[in-house]
Image 1 (cartoon, one colour):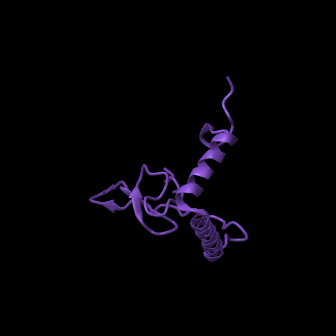
Image 2 (cartoon, one colour):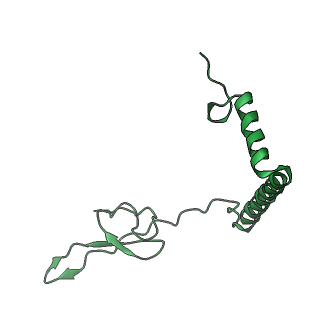
Length: 116
């Protein structure tokens, strides 16, 4: 047995019967008014979607080159010995990140690994 390919598995006969029942219950003029309202709603929705797309900022024409890698500051000498750096400054936004971080926690820019 093959199922019909219409919406919800309904065939043309079932869909026709449903349409006839709706027309009998609501009347032809009321059904046409409802369908006109549905059409206007769809038209307004499409118009708003197009307006939103026009308001969206355009993508940059050329990709922005990443900033040149910034060398981490040298270890600070205190009490006769070097201290280890506990944070790496983001070259893009200046936020401090853990030394083990590969990307900035604030802006997501790739961090330069400190050279030992």
